[in-house]
Length: 348
Ligand code: G3I
Image 1 (cartoon, rainbow, N blue to C red):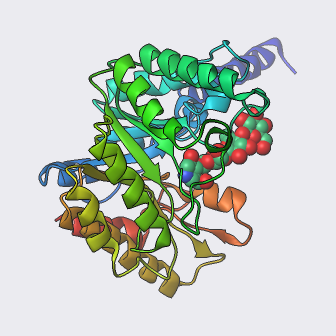
Image 2 (cartoon, helix red, strand yellow; image 1 turned 180 degrees about the vertical axis):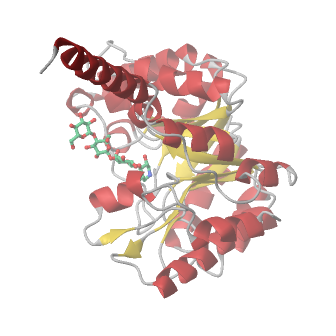
């Protein structure tokens, strides 16, 4: 091989390496544009905030994912990065970096942050479960003060207490309930309000969509908080749904909470399908999504959040065997019938 030829090959090789490095550094390819008006624009005209759960690591390294989050949604909820296990893995040692990354991106995209979550029985570090009552009380105070204080002004809404009711209608026997008694709920709200008087404070519940033993108990607990002057501003219904659709009583249920003077939000909507889904399943899923948006609008809910927006990044396919395809876009970020249904339900 001549010297010229070797030099030319070297130059091409260097160019390819640099081009690949640039491509990777910017997080890969641009997103294909989604058809129609962005969901956030459609939602805005009816005063609704529209959000998605996001993952800090994916936001950072995946350009297309990041672009669609910015384009389609007006709020974001860090899916895991503000949970106790992430934020305070060791007592008194706080890790805010990944959540701060999400906040930074949200700021650039003009989005609000929903903080999730301060007091939850799950994704707790082991040390919390090992504390006696007195120490647990102190640790909960310290956790809420530090976390809410740190994000003061950045987080507009907190899920202060998550999933405190068990499915059969009792108080969930979390470590907080067992060691501190039901009063932990009111205390968590008071501490959160003191740490950031400007943030809206929510109780967030799973599987309490219909009027049933669980939501009745939730209603009793929330009514009690209101009666006692506890600073609670809203109730979040998660709405992890499937093709059975939503209970007929969903709207009536949300209305009774709204009648207490509380804001209502749908906080974690998705619709899991058996894998692989048929075309009919995807159409049926679209109808459930339409129902979710319609129910939210029927009670003038403040905010509707999807628990992820692409099937490539969803807890359903990651944790529920045989289930998946739960979100609006497929794993290639292509719009599914559900996406168009949400657009239509938002008036697009
Ligand atoms: O961060 C670790 C990583 O270090 C480790 O290598 C990896 C191996 O499994 O696990 C990673 O943690 C996982 C975490 O998600 C972040 O990816 C946990 O195992 C996994 O359990 C966790 O799942 C989350 C789940 O909550 C439990 O906290 C899901 O992503 C998240 O979507 C789900 O969200 C909950 C809401 O917070 C509350 N409502 C129900 C909803 C669905 O379960």
